[in-house]
Image 1 (spheres, helix red, strand yellow):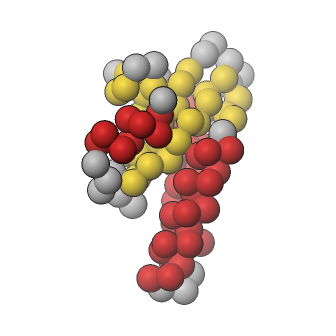
Image 2: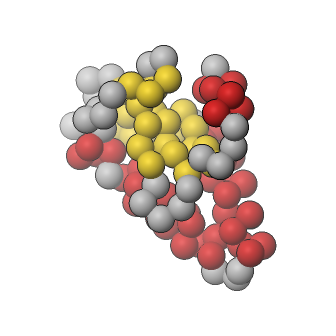
Length: 98
């Protein structure tokens, strides 16, 4: 059975996203977290079905927000490295993944 581990960096990305959306409208930050954690939970089933996106990292796109979840995969572990805003420059995202 696979386990999912979320890095401290990815947790910080989620907190930043929560703060941003909560400033936009009360309760939207909670909806953001619920949506992103549901997308992360989907990795139990769908991890590894897409091509690697950057070096050893796979990427899934959030269903409801313009965010991407970057993760690596071993036989028994899905390691979420980052949860990044797709509206940023691609070079910024690559730096975050190094």
